[in-house]
Length: 530
Image (cartoon, rainbow, N blue to C red; front, top):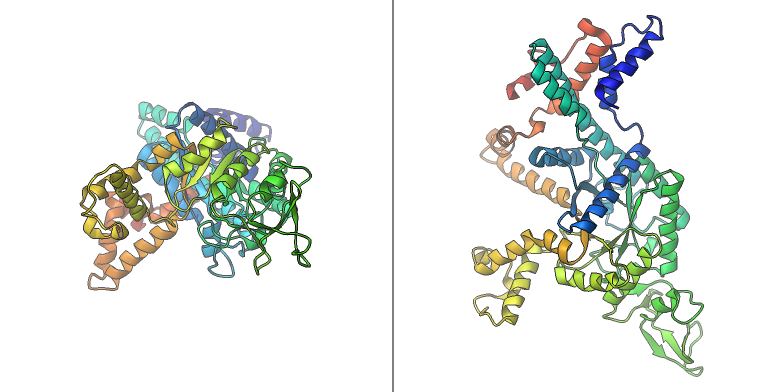
């Protein structure tokens, strides 16, 4: 509904109240409605799921149209991320937010900092989704409020052309509300627990859920050792649980991202159920590390697998887990991915131990032989040493091509002594184009960095602390923070405005008219910032 339509409809409503609503300004109501476009989390989930579907179709037509996100652990961080996207690029198109279970565990748990092992309160995940969308909606409220104040100023000045320009900006306004890909870990329990949590996450606004194929009570960070996967049927039950949650809540476009950790997971807790040779259970079990046994060598408590009449015993570890054969990770990833896409998943996530386009592409090529439009979400993880990995990739490529690499020590390529070398420059260029290259070659639709704002918070705080508590004193803050904020046009330099002070003044004026006691008078020091 347009701005003027909101005004007209409210005028008609007020007339029906026979003067008792005479103190209500229809235009003020229209403004408040536009500043609060999304009434519920489900409104947001439906809207953002539709955006992702549209973006997936655009990517299928043109792989240069991949999407991106940064992981955010607080609503304010997410808000500033998207405000910056709009500021620098003029649009939020193809920009998402990633909600990282790692950061929820490390930064949002009432137990204090925790490792990424699903030990944090599951309710903290939907709570963060709701918090992020509260902050994004407030960014809309703040920016639209500025447009409305400018409209009033243009009217007061009699500048009709400026007023028309501003009204057009309101009609064509692009919201800060963007899709969140929300990490549900391994489901925090059985399929019913997954369904219940998925509902809470969707109700909070999640249009996309990401779930991994690890055992819920043994869940590990994807870049740590000791990962344990589940048989496919167990995982498919959780995929269906997520889909049922979306459908029950009327989010028919809801997106499910299925993550396989099989590349780095060498263990399973269960032997899969198999009814006939070649079924899913049999395929899962075919990767187990086994040894041939006979009735004479079998021991009490052994699990025995019959393969074409030959009896095998899966190797059981002291932990009571079973191990897969070394070198089968990529094959298992391919099977996991195809199985997930054939059973309700929309996007894939293959967790890798390094950023390497051809490694990912080698698996995606096989997946696309079965499902041609298979698409990935890829973790551009801070757990990778990007500098070292890409310098070693260039070193290896040069060495293979017969180029002289004697000037370089492959094991020490992280050294700053190499920063100005041709090898380092080529490596940095490969890092720069990694996302575009992976989108084109390896089917990566969405690139995310899981923990960037965790690291930026630590780095910026360290830099400020070093200066402020040192000889620079207050100049350390001014040089490191405030002067940069002012000159780079960071909205937060006017922190009272960012926190909603001007919006509160608008409301006071709506409610009390000329009697309103507003905070934005001449004595407000925020005027020092223009």
